[in-house]
Image 1 (cartoon, rainbow, N blue to C red):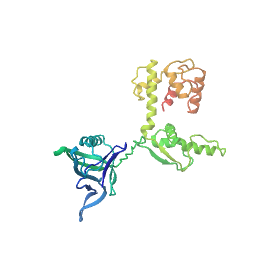
Image 2 (cartoon, one colour):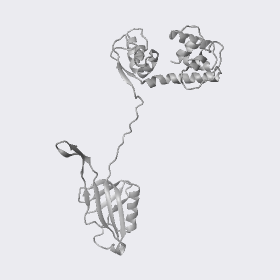
Image 3 (cartoon, rainbow, N blue to C red):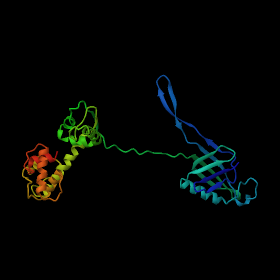
Length: 315
């Protein structure tokens, strides 16, 4: 019988003197429960890792010619240095014991040695079964607070669903964005039937994802914050830029009339909302885009971004 240890780099040790015995341990793992009328009950719950342990000698050079030496004898320090390296580096090893079924992946759990007579080193080694631990990282869901809603009839609208969940029908685009693929696919199919329908149309039986209230209103807060900063930059007022549509912000908005020839940061804010190039100058294209925006949202169409138009741009 031979005992051999080797690593993935094929560095190996053949144990020069066989131990008198190899201690092998393997046991089941149990979970204890206390059950009324039955007392303490143990139920199996996996198993513990297998271990191999033995005590033997790394013989000194004086024993080199003896018949019980296996393989070419090296100095004790040779074996000790390799063992210590494997242990400290947590190297995965293969343990092979010829003449047995042992061919296992192991780690060195503990290794100790002491100098004895004739230059021998007595050592004790404990090996533990190597099991690869696979940990699957679970991403934290960013959809905390989302809900599902099944459309009950074809006449329902995203505006109505938004009003139901957010108390604000103008948040319908938040729901649309969360369900864009679902809604667009059905609308495209219906339009092929030569039906003239809005891109925001929903149909009976569709299950919509409803983002949390915090998600729905975060966009509004960001818009308010951006407008507050623009108002401060253009010196309409000195506001606390906090994303809150308070009375001071509303009063400042009432002083603003973005029309042809207007310049500044608020103009850039308006241009972003009406989806034209943001150059901070209100020209013919910006006026036309403002008029289009006002018409789309049921506002008075005059091409001037005043309080009502700005307020709508914040929703």
